[in-house]
Amino acid sequence: MLDGVTPWPAALAAGYRERGYWRGENLSDLLREWSRTYGDRIALVHADRRISYAGLDQQVDRMAAGFRRRGIAAGDRVVVQLPNVPEFVIVCFALFRMGAKPVFALLAHRANEIRHLCALSGAVGYVVQGTYRGFDYAALAADTMAESPALEQVFVVDGLAGAEGFVPLAEVDAQPEPLVSPDPSDVAFFLLSGGTTALPKLIPRTHDDYAYQTRIAAELVGLSAEDTYLAALPVEFNFAWGCPGVIGTLRAGGTVVLAADADPDECFEAIERERVTFTSLVPTVAQLWLDAVEAAPFGSSSLRLIQIGGAPLQREIAERISPAFDCQLQQVFGMAEGMISFTLETDPAETVLSTQGRPISPGDEIRIVDEADADLPPGSTGELLVRGPYTLQGYYRAPEHNARAFTEDGYYRSGDLARLTPTGELVIEGRIKDVIIRGGNKISAAEVEGHLLTHPAVDRVAVVAIPDLFLGERICAYVRPVDEPPTLQTLRDALHDLGIADYKLPDRLEIVTDLPLTGLGKVDKKFLAKDAAAKADTLQKD
Ligand code: AMP
Image (cartoon, rainbow, N blue to C red; front, side, top):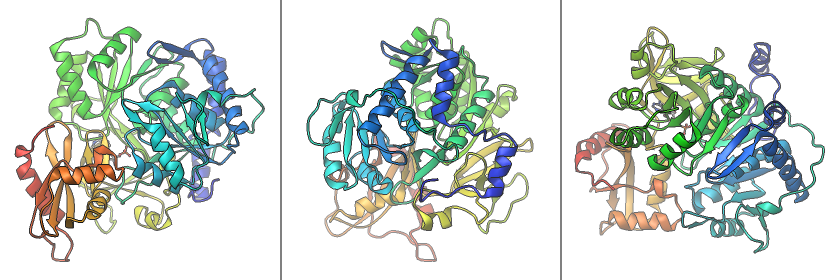
């Protein structure tokens, strides 16, 4: 096991194996097995590219050998920042095959985030698309390389040989060679936390745990080789990658269609062309799709299931999904840290519309607790604590944070407020963590506050969510200026220039003479959140 990773306690791990959750599978050998079973069937579709299972496995073999040839070793971390293209899947499996660990960056990340991910993971490699949608990722990589001592090589998907240390991905290619299979209990890759601390944390996901998550998720949605999944959300999101998403579809022998983004025109065209049977959306995207489909309904839809999750789903949106798309709705509550819950096809309509379903594994242990960690009576709302065969036991290299984020017996404090219905479904009622969910993106208030404080015009700052009809929430910054109040645009420009991803920039600025404090002398965020909600209707929409 990689240094800096907290393993499951031996007794829990033994139980997960005994009960057959962990079967000693690794994702690399699984691909080999799928290739043998599904051979010429189509695994991946992207625009006019179609890659079979056998073809995928062969490309992965060659790329794994190529990475080794170029000095990447088992255990090394490699930051992967790619759009929804087949290379995302090929690169990740090639790294799995040779025991290196992809670190999933978001496509929206910029210099500030990538530098942090490289430093935290100690990455020796970074995989990017040269330019994409007008953004120069190769230039971002060059800057990152200059500031990240461990980073030795940048692999560029559409790149030509150029600066030192830059390698076109096409040249990461060598004759396949026998490789040692990765240990199933070792880390396969790292997801990012949408967490509360100033900088994102790394979530180690093991082969065993992710193989299990994708297996059980695929079983619960009844996936078969006849299914076609549309990856409309970024594949680096756990939701699209493995709930059951890309990996779950591949293990069932189905086809994954990679969409450039969730734009309804492009996605509807792909659904009709590829006879897509299921997809997963965040509520904001679902709303866009509903408006589009209600304006111009499909001829006959191949869709059988739309999963919606990642952020609170309004009842009004939930009710419109099945009639508009003539398919089943599934509510999903999930977290990159692990635990997932689903509503099921067999659930009564009311359950599907008003709850986030039941945890997908019998091994998921959940507790609903008060502020003193005491279990609350059934039906009460409290913080959701989770433990189980695919829920982490600690963030990577974060011992101090882990001491707060987990109970002594290894339950993860989700920071979500939840209750259980009498029939055992979870209902997410809110959050106690200081996180803003803007569309599909999670933003740590502490992080944005930290960036704003570096601006010379800002003396004090507090960042809270402001409700928004379309995105669910936006970012509202309350600022006490040093002297002359800054404008929203000045602050946004300053953060942008610091290399901070655009989705984290404040949407609204409130200038105050002082921040309200609680009796304990902390900034009264509840008061500010209420104030922001009252002002919400005046918010200028983008
Ligand atoms: P992430 O790790 O980025 O997937 O974010 C996980 C967090 O998203 C959870 O802890 C919740 O705060 C939020 N979340 C996910 N699914 C839902 C949902 N169905 N309803 C409300 N919040 C959700």
